[in-house]
Image (cartoon, rainbow, N blue to C red; front, side):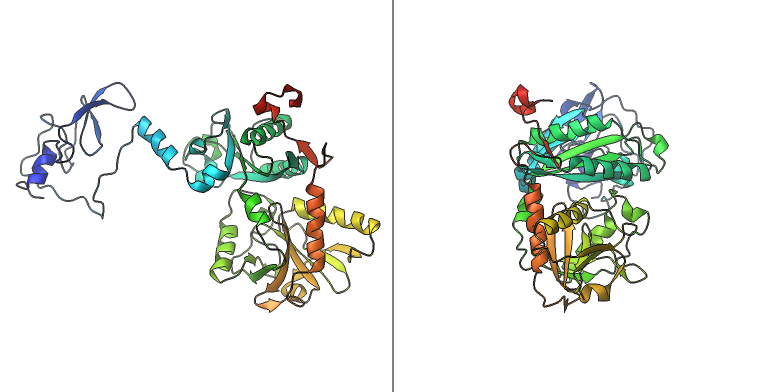
Length: 425
Protein backbone atom coordinates (compact mmCIF):
# COMPACT_ATOMS: atom_id res chain seq x y z
CA UNK A 1 0.00 0.00 0.00
CA UNK A 2 2.91 2.34 -0.60
CA UNK A 3 2.72 5.34 -2.92
CA UNK A 4 3.96 3.24 -5.79
CA UNK A 5 1.34 0.51 -5.32
CA UNK A 6 -1.04 0.41 -8.34
CA UNK A 7 -4.09 -0.14 -6.12
CA UNK A 8 -3.18 2.86 -3.99
CA UNK A 9 -2.75 4.92 -7.15
CA UNK A 10 -6.24 3.92 -8.32
CA UNK A 11 -7.66 4.87 -4.93
CA UNK A 12 -6.03 8.28 -5.10
CA UNK A 13 -7.57 8.77 -8.51
CA UNK A 14 -11.03 7.79 -7.23
CA UNK A 15 -11.09 4.73 -9.49
CA UNK A 16 -11.67 1.02 -8.95
CA UNK A 17 -10.70 -1.91 -11.10
CA UNK A 18 -14.27 -3.19 -10.73
CA UNK A 19 -16.22 0.04 -10.82
CA UNK A 20 -14.46 2.32 -13.27
CA UNK A 21 -14.74 6.09 -13.09
CA UNK A 22 -16.85 7.84 -10.45
CA UNK A 23 -20.44 8.51 -11.40
CA UNK A 24 -22.51 11.61 -10.67
CA UNK A 25 -25.17 11.25 -7.97
CA UNK A 26 -26.91 13.43 -5.38
CA UNK A 27 -26.53 13.60 -1.63
CA UNK A 28 -29.28 12.14 0.57
CA UNK A 29 -29.82 15.42 2.41
CA UNK A 30 -30.06 17.71 -0.62
CA UNK A 31 -29.90 17.88 -4.38
CA UNK A 32 -26.21 18.76 -4.31
CA UNK A 33 -24.30 17.07 -7.14
CA UNK A 34 -21.95 14.40 -5.80
CA UNK A 35 -19.18 12.15 -6.97
CA UNK A 36 -19.83 8.46 -6.26
CA UNK A 37 -16.77 6.31 -6.04
CA UNK A 38 -16.66 2.63 -6.77
CA UNK A 39 -16.70 1.98 -3.01
CA UNK A 40 -20.25 3.28 -2.48
CA UNK A 41 -19.13 6.56 -0.90
CA UNK A 42 -20.94 9.75 -1.91
CA UNK A 43 -18.91 12.97 -1.75
CA UNK A 44 -20.62 16.36 -2.30
CA UNK A 45 -18.64 18.35 -4.85
CA UNK A 46 -18.79 21.56 -2.86
CA UNK A 47 -17.30 20.05 0.33
CA UNK A 48 -14.18 21.88 1.45
CA UNK A 49 -11.85 19.71 3.52
CA UNK A 50 -10.23 21.67 6.35
CA UNK A 51 -8.40 18.69 7.81
CA UNK A 52 -6.13 16.34 5.94
CA UNK A 53 -6.01 13.41 8.36
CA UNK A 54 -7.66 11.11 5.81
CA UNK A 55 -5.76 8.09 4.55
CA UNK A 56 -6.66 8.52 0.88
CA UNK A 57 -8.10 11.32 -1.18
CA UNK A 58 -11.23 10.21 -3.01
CA UNK A 59 -11.62 13.59 -4.68
CA UNK A 60 -10.03 13.95 -8.08
CA UNK A 61 -8.27 17.27 -8.56
CA UNK A 62 -9.85 18.94 -5.51
CA UNK A 63 -7.84 17.82 -2.50
CA UNK A 64 -4.29 16.95 -3.37
CA UNK A 65 -2.47 14.32 -1.36
CA UNK A 66 -0.24 15.97 1.24
CA UNK A 67 3.45 15.90 0.51
CA UNK A 68 5.24 12.88 1.98
CA UNK A 69 1.88 11.25 2.87
CA UNK A 70 2.26 7.56 3.58
CA UNK A 71 -1.14 5.81 3.34
CA UNK A 72 -1.79 2.83 5.58
CA UNK A 73 -4.27 -0.02 5.66
CA UNK A 74 -7.50 0.62 7.59
CA UNK A 75 -7.18 -1.26 10.91
CA UNK A 76 -9.35 -4.31 11.47
CA UNK A 77 -10.47 -7.30 9.48
CA UNK A 78 -12.63 -5.43 6.97
CA UNK A 79 -11.86 -6.03 3.34
CA UNK A 80 -14.77 -4.06 1.89
CA UNK A 81 -15.72 -0.51 2.82
CA UNK A 82 -19.01 -0.14 4.74
CA UNK A 83 -21.64 0.93 2.20
CA UNK A 84 -23.46 4.24 2.49
CA UNK A 85 -27.00 3.32 1.47
CA UNK A 86 -29.34 5.32 -0.72
CA UNK A 87 -33.02 5.56 0.18
CA UNK A 88 -33.84 3.12 -2.60
CA UNK A 89 -31.24 0.63 -1.36
CA UNK A 90 -32.56 0.92 2.22
CA UNK A 91 -36.08 -0.02 1.13
CA UNK A 92 -34.71 -2.84 -1.01
CA UNK A 93 -32.66 -4.28 1.85
CA UNK A 94 -35.51 -4.00 4.35
CA UNK A 95 -37.72 -5.99 2.00
CA UNK A 96 -35.07 -8.57 1.19
CA UNK A 97 -34.25 -8.93 4.89
CA UNK A 98 -37.67 -10.27 5.91
CA UNK A 99 -37.07 -13.71 7.41
CA UNK A 100 -39.40 -16.67 6.91
CA UNK A 101 -41.06 -16.45 10.36
CA UNK A 102 -41.85 -12.77 9.85
CA UNK A 103 -43.31 -13.40 6.40
CA UNK A 104 -45.48 -16.21 7.75
CA UNK A 105 -46.59 -14.81 11.10
CA UNK A 106 -46.15 -11.03 11.39
CA UNK A 107 -49.60 -9.89 10.36
CA UNK A 108 -49.94 -6.19 11.20
CA UNK A 109 -48.08 -3.45 13.06
CA UNK A 110 -49.30 -0.09 14.36
CA UNK A 111 -46.82 2.72 14.98
CA UNK A 112 -47.63 6.07 16.54
CA UNK A 113 -44.66 7.43 14.57
CA UNK A 114 -46.38 6.44 11.33
CA UNK A 115 -49.85 7.21 12.64
CA UNK A 116 -51.26 4.02 11.17
CA UNK A 117 -50.92 0.30 10.47
CA UNK A 118 -48.56 -1.50 8.10
CA UNK A 119 -48.89 -5.12 6.99
CA UNK A 120 -45.52 -5.44 5.22
CA UNK A 121 -43.09 -6.98 7.77
CA UNK A 122 -40.26 -5.02 6.13
CA UNK A 123 -41.58 -1.81 7.68
CA UNK A 124 -42.44 -3.09 11.17
CA UNK A 125 -39.57 -1.09 12.69
CA UNK A 126 -38.92 1.27 15.61
CA UNK A 127 -36.39 4.12 15.64
CA UNK A 128 -33.19 3.62 17.61
CA UNK A 129 -33.63 6.86 19.57
CA UNK A 130 -36.83 5.60 21.20
CA UNK A 131 -35.99 5.25 24.89
CA UNK A 132 -37.60 1.80 24.97
CA UNK A 133 -34.91 0.62 22.55
CA UNK A 134 -31.74 2.00 24.11
CA UNK A 135 -32.84 2.42 27.77
CA UNK A 136 -35.58 -0.19 28.20
CA UNK A 137 -37.98 2.57 29.31
CA UNK A 138 -41.23 1.08 28.13
CA UNK A 139 -43.94 -1.34 29.22
CA UNK A 140 -46.01 -3.83 27.26
CA UNK A 141 -48.81 -6.32 27.53
CA UNK A 142 -50.41 -9.03 25.44
CA UNK A 143 -53.87 -10.28 24.54
CA UNK A 144 -54.92 -13.47 22.79
CA UNK A 145 -56.80 -13.45 19.51
CA UNK A 146 -59.14 -16.45 19.62
CA UNK A 147 -61.51 -17.30 16.76
CA UNK A 148 -61.86 -13.64 15.84
CA UNK A 149 -62.24 -12.33 19.40
CA UNK A 150 -59.76 -10.70 21.77
CA UNK A 151 -59.74 -12.63 25.04
CA UNK A 152 -59.73 -10.58 28.27
CA UNK A 153 -58.55 -7.35 26.65
CA UNK A 154 -60.02 -5.02 29.34
CA UNK A 155 -58.13 -6.91 32.08
CA UNK A 156 -54.88 -6.75 30.15
CA UNK A 157 -55.35 -3.04 29.50
CA UNK A 158 -55.86 -2.36 33.21
CA UNK A 159 -52.56 -4.08 34.01
CA UNK A 160 -50.95 -2.23 31.10
CA UNK A 161 -51.99 1.11 32.54
CA UNK A 162 -50.79 0.17 36.04
CA UNK A 163 -47.39 -0.81 34.63
CA UNK A 164 -47.17 2.46 32.70
CA UNK A 165 -47.99 4.49 35.80
CA UNK A 166 -45.38 2.63 37.89
CA UNK A 167 -42.82 3.22 35.14
CA UNK A 168 -43.56 6.94 35.04
CA UNK A 169 -44.99 6.76 31.53
CA UNK A 170 -47.86 8.82 30.17
CA UNK A 171 -50.48 7.06 28.09
CA UNK A 172 -50.38 8.80 24.69
CA UNK A 173 -54.08 8.25 23.95
CA UNK A 174 -57.38 7.65 25.70
CA UNK A 175 -58.40 4.16 26.83
CA UNK A 176 -60.96 4.02 24.04
CA UNK A 177 -58.41 5.03 21.40
CA UNK A 178 -55.87 2.47 22.63
CA UNK A 179 -58.50 -0.27 22.56
CA UNK A 180 -59.59 0.71 19.05
CA UNK A 181 -56.01 0.63 17.75
CA UNK A 182 -55.49 -2.85 19.19
CA UNK A 183 -58.74 -4.10 17.66
CA UNK A 184 -57.96 -2.55 14.27
CA UNK A 185 -54.44 -3.98 14.28
CA UNK A 186 -55.88 -7.44 14.91
CA UNK A 187 -58.34 -6.90 12.07
CA UNK A 188 -55.66 -5.68 9.67
CA UNK A 189 -53.65 -8.86 10.29
CA UNK A 190 -56.56 -10.90 8.86
CA UNK A 191 -55.76 -13.55 11.48
CA UNK A 192 -58.53 -15.29 13.37
CA UNK A 193 -56.10 -16.68 15.93
CA UNK A 194 -52.91 -15.11 17.21
CA UNK A 195 -51.60 -12.73 19.82
CA UNK A 196 -51.50 -8.95 19.96
CA UNK A 197 -48.65 -7.28 21.83
CA UNK A 198 -48.67 -3.58 22.54
CA UNK A 199 -46.16 -1.16 24.04
CA UNK A 200 -46.06 2.36 25.46
CA UNK A 201 -42.65 4.01 25.54
CA UNK A 202 -41.06 7.17 26.87
CA UNK A 203 -40.69 8.15 23.21
CA UNK A 204 -38.04 9.41 20.84
CA UNK A 205 -35.70 12.34 21.24
CA UNK A 206 -32.12 11.28 21.83
CA UNK A 207 -29.80 8.79 23.47
CA UNK A 208 -29.62 10.22 26.98
CA UNK A 209 -31.18 8.83 30.13
CA UNK A 210 -33.52 11.70 30.97
CA UNK A 211 -37.02 11.57 29.52
CA UNK A 212 -36.96 15.36 29.23
CA UNK A 213 -35.44 14.96 25.80
CA UNK A 214 -38.34 12.80 24.59
CA UNK A 215 -40.74 14.55 22.24
CA UNK A 216 -43.86 12.52 23.07
CA UNK A 217 -44.76 9.02 24.29
CA UNK A 218 -44.74 6.24 21.71
CA UNK A 219 -47.31 3.51 21.21
CA UNK A 220 -46.94 0.37 19.13
CA UNK A 221 -49.08 -2.73 18.56
CA UNK A 222 -48.22 -5.97 16.77
CA UNK A 223 -50.42 -8.91 15.80
CA UNK A 224 -48.70 -12.22 15.13
CA UNK A 225 -49.63 -15.88 14.92
CA UNK A 226 -46.25 -17.31 15.98
CA UNK A 227 -47.10 -18.17 19.58
CA UNK A 228 -50.33 -19.92 18.61
CA UNK A 229 -48.35 -22.36 16.48
CA UNK A 230 -45.79 -22.96 19.23
CA UNK A 231 -48.42 -23.32 21.96
CA UNK A 232 -50.54 -25.84 20.08
CA UNK A 233 -47.52 -27.95 19.13
CA UNK A 234 -46.53 -28.59 22.77
CA UNK A 235 -47.15 -32.06 24.23
CA UNK A 236 -48.54 -31.20 27.67
CA UNK A 237 -48.65 -34.81 28.77
CA UNK A 238 -44.85 -34.72 29.04
CA UNK A 239 -44.86 -31.58 31.19
CA UNK A 240 -41.90 -29.27 31.79
CA UNK A 241 -38.66 -30.04 33.58
CA UNK A 242 -37.53 -26.94 35.48
CA UNK A 243 -34.43 -25.80 37.32
CA UNK A 244 -33.89 -23.14 39.95
CA UNK A 245 -32.24 -20.21 38.20
CA UNK A 246 -28.98 -18.58 39.35
CA UNK A 247 -30.35 -15.28 38.04
CA UNK A 248 -31.52 -12.95 40.81
CA UNK A 249 -35.26 -12.12 40.50
CA UNK A 250 -36.39 -8.55 39.98
CA UNK A 251 -37.88 -8.01 43.45
CA UNK A 252 -40.53 -5.50 44.46
CA UNK A 253 -41.69 -3.26 42.80
CA UNK A 254 -39.99 -4.09 39.50
CA UNK A 255 -41.29 -7.67 39.49
CA UNK A 256 -44.84 -6.28 39.42
CA UNK A 257 -44.21 -4.10 36.33
CA UNK A 258 -44.52 -5.68 32.89
CA UNK A 259 -41.62 -3.65 31.56
CA UNK A 260 -39.74 -4.07 28.31
CA UNK A 261 -36.56 -4.85 30.24
CA UNK A 262 -36.59 -8.65 30.09
CA UNK A 263 -32.85 -9.23 30.38
CA UNK A 264 -33.13 -11.26 33.59
CA UNK A 265 -36.03 -13.22 32.14
CA UNK A 266 -34.09 -13.99 28.95
CA UNK A 267 -31.02 -15.06 30.94
CA UNK A 268 -33.18 -17.26 33.17
CA UNK A 269 -34.54 -19.15 30.17
CA UNK A 270 -31.19 -19.21 28.38
CA UNK A 271 -29.48 -20.73 31.41
CA UNK A 272 -32.18 -23.41 31.72
CA UNK A 273 -32.07 -24.35 28.05
CA UNK A 274 -28.27 -24.47 28.04
CA UNK A 275 -28.45 -26.96 30.91
CA UNK A 276 -31.03 -29.14 29.19
CA UNK A 277 -34.18 -27.99 31.02
CA UNK A 278 -37.41 -26.62 29.58
CA UNK A 279 -37.60 -23.58 31.84
CA UNK A 280 -36.02 -21.92 34.87
CA UNK A 281 -37.76 -20.54 37.95
CA UNK A 282 -36.68 -17.54 39.99
CA UNK A 283 -35.84 -18.06 43.68
CA UNK A 284 -35.38 -15.05 45.97
CA UNK A 285 -32.75 -14.57 48.70
CA UNK A 286 -35.04 -16.12 51.29
CA UNK A 287 -35.40 -19.30 49.26
CA UNK A 288 -38.93 -18.60 48.02
CA UNK A 289 -39.88 -19.72 44.53
CA UNK A 290 -41.39 -16.76 42.69
CA UNK A 291 -42.21 -17.44 39.03
CA UNK A 292 -40.83 -18.56 35.69
CA UNK A 293 -39.29 -16.21 33.12
CA UNK A 294 -42.74 -15.29 31.75
CA UNK A 295 -45.18 -17.47 33.64
CA UNK A 296 -46.72 -17.87 37.08
CA UNK A 297 -46.29 -20.96 39.25
CA UNK A 298 -48.66 -22.85 41.56
CA UNK A 299 -48.77 -26.15 43.41
CA UNK A 300 -51.50 -28.46 44.69
CA UNK A 301 -50.72 -30.00 48.06
CA UNK A 302 -51.62 -33.52 49.15
CA UNK A 303 -54.39 -31.85 51.18
CA UNK A 304 -55.93 -30.54 47.93
CA UNK A 305 -54.97 -26.90 48.57
CA UNK A 306 -53.83 -24.81 45.61
CA UNK A 307 -51.02 -22.42 46.59
CA UNK A 308 -49.53 -19.69 44.43
CA UNK A 309 -46.99 -17.04 45.56
CA UNK A 310 -48.12 -13.54 46.60
CA UNK A 311 -48.21 -10.87 43.91
CA UNK A 312 -45.56 -8.65 45.52
CA UNK A 313 -42.69 -10.82 44.25
CA UNK A 314 -43.96 -11.63 40.76
CA UNK A 315 -46.09 -10.27 37.98
CA UNK A 316 -49.83 -10.55 38.51
CA UNK A 317 -50.72 -13.00 35.75
CA UNK A 318 -54.06 -12.54 34.00
CA UNK A 319 -54.20 -16.26 33.13
CA UNK A 320 -53.63 -17.25 36.75
CA UNK A 321 -56.28 -14.76 37.85
CA UNK A 322 -58.81 -16.24 35.47
CA UNK A 323 -57.94 -19.80 36.46
CA UNK A 324 -58.48 -18.99 40.14
CA UNK A 325 -61.93 -17.70 39.21
CA UNK A 326 -62.81 -20.74 37.12
CA UNK A 327 -61.82 -23.36 39.69
CA UNK A 328 -64.54 -22.53 42.27
CA UNK A 329 -67.13 -22.21 39.50
CA UNK A 330 -66.20 -25.61 38.08
CA UNK A 331 -66.06 -27.15 41.58
CA UNK A 332 -69.60 -25.94 42.25
CA UNK A 333 -70.83 -27.56 39.02
CA UNK A 334 -68.83 -30.79 39.33
CA UNK A 335 -67.52 -31.19 42.89
CA UNK A 336 -66.16 -34.66 42.19
CA UNK A 337 -64.12 -33.54 39.18
CA UNK A 338 -62.13 -30.67 40.72
CA UNK A 339 -59.74 -31.93 43.37
CA UNK A 340 -59.10 -28.53 44.98
CA UNK A 341 -60.84 -27.61 48.20
CA UNK A 342 -59.12 -24.28 48.88
CA UNK A 343 -56.98 -21.59 47.22
CA UNK A 344 -54.23 -19.80 49.16
CA UNK A 345 -51.64 -17.16 48.27
CA UNK A 346 -48.49 -17.61 50.33
CA UNK A 347 -44.73 -17.98 49.80
CA UNK A 348 -43.47 -21.28 48.44
CA UNK A 349 -40.12 -22.88 49.16
CA UNK A 350 -38.28 -25.27 46.87
CA UNK A 351 -39.21 -28.03 49.33
CA UNK A 352 -42.89 -27.08 49.02
CA UNK A 353 -42.72 -27.50 45.24
CA UNK A 354 -40.88 -30.81 45.43
CA UNK A 355 -43.30 -32.13 48.05
CA UNK A 356 -46.45 -31.16 46.16
CA UNK A 357 -49.01 -33.51 44.69
CA UNK A 358 -48.86 -31.43 41.49
CA UNK A 359 -47.17 -28.28 40.25
CA UNK A 360 -47.85 -26.25 37.13
CA UNK A 361 -47.07 -23.02 35.25
CA UNK A 362 -49.51 -20.59 33.63
CA UNK A 363 -49.19 -17.85 31.02
CA UNK A 364 -51.15 -16.16 28.26
CA UNK A 365 -49.37 -17.98 25.46
CA UNK A 366 -48.66 -21.11 27.50
CA UNK A 367 -52.08 -21.67 29.16
CA UNK A 368 -51.38 -24.37 31.80
CA UNK A 369 -48.26 -26.54 31.71
CA UNK A 370 -47.67 -29.34 34.26
CA UNK A 371 -44.33 -29.21 36.05
CA UNK A 372 -42.91 -32.74 36.42
CA UNK A 373 -39.47 -32.11 37.95
CA UNK A 374 -37.38 -29.43 39.62
CA UNK A 375 -33.57 -29.65 39.57
CA UNK A 376 -33.77 -33.28 38.38
CA UNK A 377 -35.96 -34.27 41.34
CA UNK A 378 -39.38 -35.60 40.27
CA UNK A 379 -42.48 -33.88 41.57
CA UNK A 380 -44.77 -36.64 42.90
CA UNK A 381 -44.45 -39.50 40.39
CA UNK A 382 -42.72 -37.35 37.78
CA UNK A 383 -45.72 -37.43 35.46
CA UNK A 384 -47.96 -34.60 34.23
CA UNK A 385 -50.62 -33.99 36.87
CA UNK A 386 -54.16 -34.84 35.87
CA UNK A 387 -55.53 -31.77 37.67
CA UNK A 388 -53.19 -29.43 35.80
CA UNK A 389 -54.25 -30.98 32.49
CA UNK A 390 -57.88 -30.52 33.52
CA UNK A 391 -57.16 -26.86 34.31
CA UNK A 392 -55.74 -26.42 30.81
CA UNK A 393 -58.93 -27.88 29.32
CA UNK A 394 -60.96 -25.45 31.45
CA UNK A 395 -59.01 -22.52 30.02
CA UNK A 396 -59.40 -23.79 26.45
CA UNK A 397 -63.16 -23.90 26.93
CA UNK A 398 -63.18 -20.45 28.52
CA UNK A 399 -61.24 -19.03 25.58
CA UNK A 400 -63.87 -20.18 23.11
CA UNK A 401 -66.04 -17.16 22.33
CA UNK A 402 -69.07 -18.95 20.96
CA UNK A 403 -71.19 -17.27 18.29
CA UNK A 404 -71.47 -13.86 19.94
CA UNK A 405 -68.66 -13.82 22.45
CA UNK A 406 -69.14 -12.98 26.10
CA UNK A 407 -67.86 -10.72 28.88
CA UNK A 408 -64.32 -12.04 28.38
CA UNK A 409 -64.37 -11.61 24.59
CA UNK A 410 -64.36 -8.57 22.30
CA UNK A 411 -65.20 -9.11 18.64
CA UNK A 412 -62.54 -7.95 16.18
CA UNK A 413 -64.02 -5.57 13.56
CA UNK A 414 -62.78 -7.32 10.43
CA UNK A 415 -65.09 -5.04 8.46
CA UNK A 416 -62.31 -2.52 8.94
CA UNK A 417 -60.44 -4.46 6.25
CA UNK A 418 -63.23 -6.21 4.36
CA UNK A 419 -65.63 -3.31 3.94
CA UNK A 420 -68.40 -5.03 5.91
CA UNK A 421 -69.60 -1.81 7.53
CA UNK A 422 -72.07 -3.57 9.80
CA UNK A 423 -69.10 -4.93 11.75
CA UNK A 424 -67.66 -1.51 12.47
CA UNK A 425 -68.29 0.23 15.76
